[in-house]
Image (tube, rainbow, N blue to C red; front, top):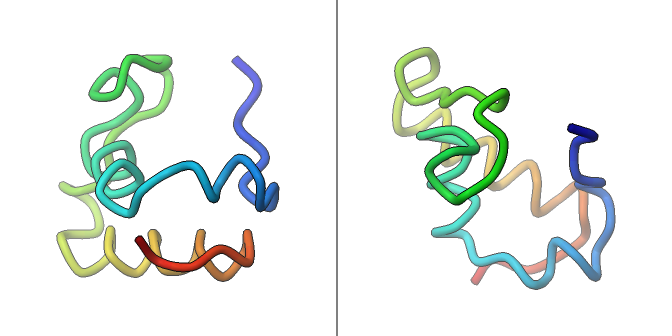
Length: 65
């Protein structure tokens, strides 16, 4: 599957930080998306996932919520 455009502020603005955390931490299947997106919590830890969510917010120009 084609990955989401993480720089799309309209799309990214619809997603909560909790949703982004869940998909980054647990993978696509955790939110009903592709199992090809693996979870990263085991590789980068909790703080790493939080940092990735913060980076997605910067990349998309959307506020935390």
